[in-house]
Length: 222
Length: 399
Ligand SMILES: Nc1ncnc2c1ncn2[C@@H]1O[C@H](COP(=O)(O)OP(=O)(O)O)[C@@H](O)[C@H]1O
Ligand SMILES: [Mg+2]
View 1 (cartoon, helix red, strand yellow):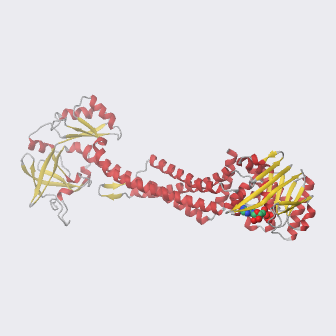
View 2 (cartoon, helix red, strand yellow):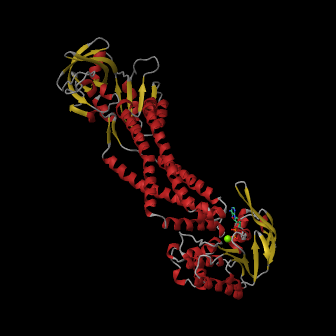
View 3 (cartoon, protein in one colour):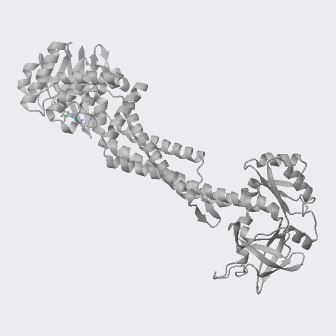
């Protein structure tokens, strides 16, 4: 369902060129839980950004469900993200002006659902990520682990074809991390959720079906 | 489109609800003062214009003024003309006047001016001098040796300086009048009036009977003032008068004052325009800064919104809605302030030399102010949010 061909991303830092991705090709099957590992600076986040349509690669091709997503217009990309993708950032990227619940159902609202349905579906999702009683709290009233679970709930609310997660446990303690990884595993097993997760912790490996190792912007092994 | 507007509205509401109350209150306060400023000064200028016009109608021209034909010095057959005019329904009254140059002398002081004649019964219907008597009395029909004068001619006793007047003559004093035809006659000052500093206080009146006997004329006039029942019907009546076959010059008060009011008011209008522009610039800057700081501060939020698939236009619109919220709140609070201010000034009008001034707020002034503030808010809300929302997602989130 995801096909990546010779993907390149060059950053320009003044006159210096940073080759973050030097030509990466791989495929991900429907329902797969793929781990992306590699040392810091190897290009994991960059790769995920390209796949998640948050950035535009310098070269190569990406097909998701046979759609050449690099050919989409900005508005089409936005709609694509809204309807088909879920993204969890390394940092807690939740909206400070919205409550946890509002954060979670916002994508549904944007998809045109009625507010009442949004709230109901949002609450259901809250139960899934075990956050029920924190629904009406603002960001500043939530712990790091809770914020990350809000972000995950928001990424899942639109039933995305693919869930991207960039070191979702980087800022969490082991207990919270395990909780989230188990949630991913369960989503993958029970609902067949396709997941691409970046991590650099060895013990996270066991949750994924398959691991791709990156090094210096290239696939080292897979 | 409509669904998307719902999302913009949702985001704008939450943003306002969870923003700093102090900032919100301050912003709305500034916007409301800007709105007050947009309306207040022009309303005073409008009030001044209206007072000037009212004064000239009440004291100099009436609603319509009839003057001698080209090349004639007087209007002839005044009585029949007046009757003809008064018969028309909608005409409240007419007053004919002779106007002659004269010199007024008291002891060693003298001053030149225009002496008018008045038929008291007619004048009372058409003009308001009788209401402006500050001492003594208005003329009565049978007076022959009496004169009434404006305060600028009589002068005030205690006033220092070399003002050109009679140095504070009092009711009962003898005034020697030298007519332009050479006749010199002494009159008793029967009353002093003060109606407006626009020139009317330099007028003096004797009865028509007396004037005709001095001039040796009969049934003539320098002008006829016509008072109508309804303001605003002048053009219509002018046409009717012409249809009656009146050959004399017929001018509405607007035609007569066009020059004067324009000169006075246009200078004020320039000040008003400057003040309006300054107010609008302040409004632009305030909203711009607030939305700009808001968006800068919320760059990361905007990045996240875009990352999860919220359309950039929805985000921009949410900021425009916030700007409109500040704008409308300002207009509402400003309207309340204005209402208080205007009700106060209506019961306690400001005293100007030309008369008392009440603010006059027309609907066009209101719609114009609301519209300009609205447009300004739209622009000031749009530009900063558009600039920020256009940024790439990753840059917005991580700087
Ligand atoms: N916006 C950027 N501008 C310039 N260089 C960047 C940018 N983002 C990432 N890089 C560089 O690209 C390389 C890969 O970064 P990244 O994908 O974040 O690595 P990882 O996530 O594996 O730690 C690094 O050398 C990093 O410094
Ligand atoms: Mg990274």
